[in-house]
Image (cartoon, rainbow, N blue to C red; front, top):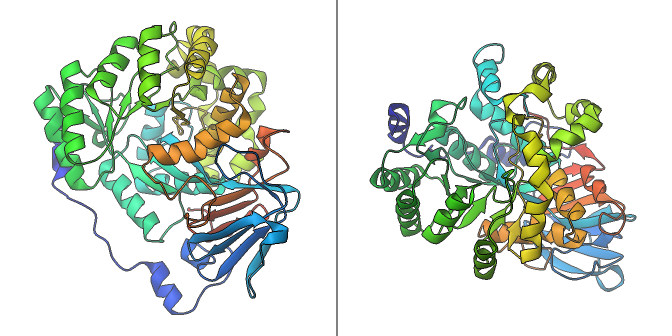
Length: 474
């Protein structure tokens, strides 16, 4: 285990305390305007969304001309507009001509990255020209980008533990705007990930160390464990046993068949990256076993083998003004400079092979009936926090999954992967995580999801008419 990670373990959980939001609420400052703290967005009372089409996240056709009533942080009534009375004094948001749906969830994110052209160079930039930005500030910015893009929940699968845990707590306490987070902290691995901060890797040399690392991470306050590269079969078994003793899940970074098999048989809870390996399809026996057990797979298919050709075809996507609006100007300028020779970056060294096998692998898993969530590996090169999830969803649709099912995968199924039964669908009694997008993303154009007009998380309104109600972190 690396010395730096051992020192971090000793810090323990970040403390909690009174939030600035709670103090401001005590002064009665509850205005709907652009402020730096989400506590200043609408917090109490009743909000009604009415007039649009409703996708509730369940496997059923959309409900047209629907009404959703939210009181506090909960959905209290859902139904046809003609059957649902609008409570007196409610804030009413007209969604006519639009679609209401559950907030999206990204099942594989990295909030300490923003899509910079090279991962190692990104962290070097943060030490030099970008030194005014701490890792936690970058994570705060990523969370803001995700929330404004309709992502109300995310699983952060690899980062600095202290900053990750503290960010999650600050979001939960209402200090800052961001998605509901589950955080893994450092990668549990046999070799440190090149270019990442030292704190982001917990290097082990044997299974006993793997189990001890899980115990220490749990003590720090992580929600899940990320088992990364180079692990032996015995490592997986030790890591899973320790994690399950604490009642937390293990997500495994697996590509090749042997690693998938070892992780699966050890009882790893979620198989991350499986199906985006750039190699021939898996053995039918292995895929059948995984599908039969409903062990979740999160493909992350788009982050190399679709993003690369999409960017070759339309490099202007890298200068998208909607993405630019979610960046401080100096970070945006640095990110743009990092794209100067992006096709030659080592991240895409195996792109020909990855493109060759991309469709066969994805289709194999789709056709197997495997239980699949949706994740992005967001923050990796050219894979922005604001658009990666929609690109991933589009890949699944293009490869044969019906759009309504893909939306359910990115909402209800991802909520199950997070073990959050109160999320992922729009039903009375559930937590109010709801977004509104233009037109019809199911039968007309999934790309409508790129243009989120309304974002509500936990009953709080963060975006209205396409305009953020909370200021971007600087």
